Image (cartoon, rainbow, N blue to C red; front, side):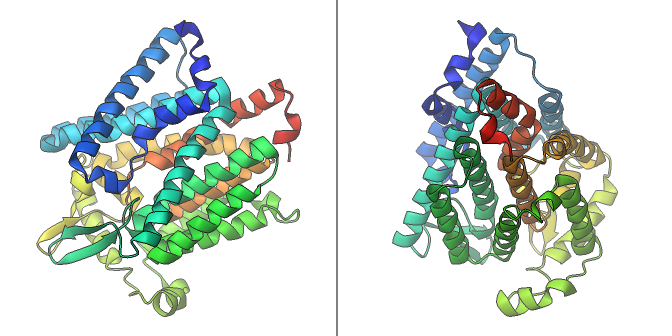
Length: 400
């Protein structure tokens, strides 16, 4: 019975139920009983997926193996340097590993059903979040991260955190539509409009710049003369340049008009450059293995409190040092190698754009890696998606 676990992944509703516990809206996490139910369900589903993987005799990919080593490293270093946060660290990384395993197993069994299931979960929560924003324009809760600091919280979280959810959601929406219909249908356009209105409502600089670039690149991807320029290698080089310019050189003059006049924000990006300088000092003190994980990633001292580094690469360096960052770069390389190899396919370009847009949000944020790893896992398995489409005589669906 377990030799053919793929029957479970042929039903998108079953796959959606497997995914649902790991896509937890921030607001529901604040309700104690609901959070406990989520945590219990996550443990059950994780053990079920591990059991199915073991009994099916399937081997995990090199991508998933490296990702597992990276996640275990985070937990181990937390045990060494910050044991009081060990349980939370295990939980955080088990959630990410579960998303990776479900995504990979689902893609290898029935890629279209897997993508439809993820798409259903994401779109449902996007719509719920938007409806609640209309009903409760002042948010559904108040976030109080530090003394005398209060932020409006929505169903999916505070302003900057929402973008890290919405960009992967729109990306999976588009690639699912392309694979199933060979075009972007009306429903994805409506959901993307909802996503855009949501980000305008929260008015986050990081989110709005990312979605603006995302939509422009999506438009370019439809133009015959420009679409072939969209490759993950080019975007990776561009991202590295931006990271050096913004985080290392801290030269923001190219965005002065946009940041100060349009968004009415300080050129210090809400003191992020100050935080980055403090983060670099800490990294130099423990460069190889970092300091392990901490609650909310709060490493950097700010007055009488602490904050995250507000940059994902700095955050990884703080948590796991050069060792962990190297593992993450290897994981990223596995994915972009596949994206580059199959760049002629439309859904591959949309996946490339989505991945780049999510990375842009990580320039000034250090949110968890859950949704990034979903996109990386899909990217690493593009060949599987194409082979299944050809096997099912759906050649016209995947060819550009």
